[in-house]
Length: 246
Image (cartoon, rainbow, N blue to C red; front, side, top):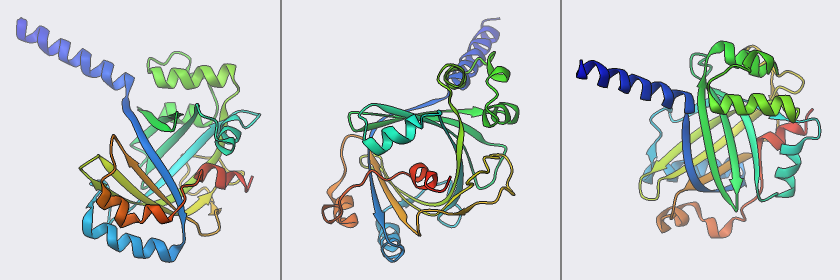
């Protein structure tokens, strides 16, 4: 009986954790715009020092995101204005795999970033991507419930579809993650998140976005490898780049 009770408690804990989702602690995040030529050169140097992300296929994966904003474009304008405390919601999946759907909330406070994420069912993702907060009102997932309430009271709605290719690299000291994002595309008027045939067009003029993320310290060897002292960090956003086309 005691073993059965412990098993039941373990299952309940797992269920509650699955509802809460994953919270990634506050991290530093710097972004840079680089050329395609710089991306090719940097990619080779990164491969010599850093490890490959375990989820990458042939060193990369494809990402599709659907971003939310309100009628006043609050998330977009706060990004452009560099507001100190801001947030944005998005749906996401990788490599066209509709069996692994995520809702993410990314927050920025005092220059540090935090990300929360939760897995969604196909039905939940369909409702969220359609802006149907009524269908989500009974959800037991806190992050999805927060999105639902902000859709209801703040007017958040699906706004822009963003596709891109990511080449990720990892380095254990400092929990460093370096990504190279290119082939950025937008759905323009199409926000059919779950339709792999939704037509997207190039955005960003061939820009590659270099992102560097770390916890408490960034090893000097990574700084030297990236030549960060020679590049000014910029407030670039794939969401903002794609909003230029709608």
